[in-house]
Image: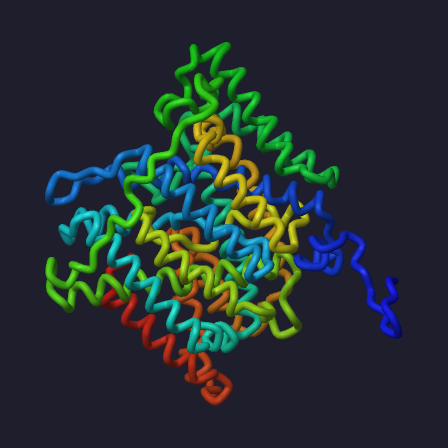
Length: 472
C-alpha cells in the first residue's frame, strides 16, 4: 500500500506494466506473457512464407506477379502493427496476420477469376475493411455477437479447436486429399523423414504438456525445429524441405535481410470500373461475410479458452477487439498483404498462460524483428508447428462437455457448427450452418420468440451466402 496525504492507493506488484495490462489481476506474470507471445508467434510465423506463396502464385491481366520478398515484408509489417495495436488498445492476447482463405480468395477469385489487377483486388479488401469498421462503430457487430446463444458460442470454440487440429494434420502431411476415393484420407506413405519429424515433435510436445511443464508448446516447437535441421543435414543432404521453401529446416546462410516496402499503398478503388457493379458488390459482401464471422467465431473461441468470457459468454470490451480487427482488414489491403484478421493460432499462447495484451505486444515485436531476421523465421518447418496445432485443438475440444446435447434444438446446430468448420476448411461455413439450423428448429418448435431478432437478420444473410455467395 502507498499513502499520499489522506488518500491510500493500492500499488500493483508489477508496477506500471502490471497495472496497464492488468497482468496480476488476470492471474498471469510478465514471464508467462513473454513465453505465450513467443509460442503464438512461432505457431503462426508460417504466414510470413505462406502468404507470399499464395499471393505470388497468380498473375493479373497485365502479367504482374507480387514479388515474394515484398509480400513477406508487408505481411510482417501489418501483422506487427495491428497485433501491437490489439495488445495496447484491447488488452487481449490475440494476434493478427494475413488471413488464410481470404488471401486465396484475393488471388484465385478476385485476380484469377474476375480479372482484377492486384491494386484493384487489394482495393476490394480496403473497402470491406472500412465497411466492417463502420458496423463496429455503430455497435451492430457486437450486437450480433451478443445475440448468439451460449451453447452456439461454445460450439464455435469447439469447431475452431477441431479445425486447428485438422490444419495441423494437413500441414504435417498426415491427412491428404486423394485424387480418387474418400474426400480426405491418411497419407499412403507415412515412412518419410518429414513424417518422422512430425511424430517426434508430437510425442515430445504431448509428453511435455502431459507433465504440465510451463512453456511446453514453445519448447516443443524449438526442439522439433532443431531435430528437423539435424535430420535435414545428416540424412537429407539439406534437401528434404526444399519444396516447402528456401532455408526451411536448414542453418541459415544469412541472419539479417533488408526489408522491401515497395508494395505499401499499392491499392486502387477501380473495381467498379473493372467489373460490373453487381459483381463488385457481391465480391465485397462475400469477403465481408467471411471476415465478419470468422473473427467473431475466433474471438469467442479464444476468449473461452482463456476463460475471459463472462457468465453470458460475452467478452468484456469486445468492441475494441472488433475495431482493431476491422482496421487490420483495411490496413492489410492498403499494404497489399491481403486482409488481416485475428488468428486462431493465438490459442497457442493462451494455452501457455497468456491472458493480457502484453502477449500480443510480444507477438507484434517478434513480427517487427522478422522484418530484418526473415531468414531465421524461415527455418521453422511446418512439422514443428503442426504438433502444437493438434494439441491446441485438444485444449479447445474440452468445451464439448458443456453443450446441452440432450436438446436437439441445440445439439443439431452445434454438430453442424463443429463439423463443417474442418470439413469445409471455413469457420464461416460452420457458423452459418449452425445459425440457420438453430433458427429453423426454433421456429418449427414454436419457439420463435426465443430467437433474437438479429439472428433472423443474420440467418437471412446466410441464406444468401449459401445460395448466391462467392465463397464456398
